[in-house]
Length: 156
Image (cartoon, rainbow, N blue to C red; front, side):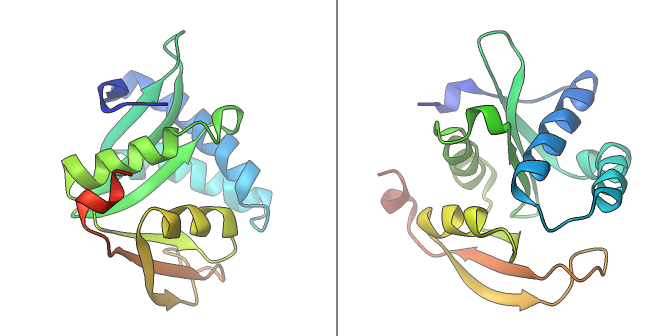
């Protein structure tokens, strides 16, 4: 199980590794996105999105980044886990660090990504709204989530 002391702040030199984790995660969970859109988003990730958030990450024993999250203005803007380590508690660790240490209480999730939606609902979030399009105006609906449980209830 991952612990808070395994959460690090990535450096600019880690951006290629973050992009690798992002793309592997997206390809494993966002089968509704066309390849051309994934390629566009990857370019934007590296050129704009990573710099727009407070980044946190976890690394394996070989110091390879295995997952990361980005938080801005009380929102989890991104949370991506390397598919090879999914189900080991890394996403939960990063999410709870974002909640407890970075005061994140809101996030959006693709409606067409039921695994991610289920994960966030199990972590104490509820759906409070919906958009027909994603942040770039494309027809990939987003669900808007907000944390509803108290911090004490989340630690279990």
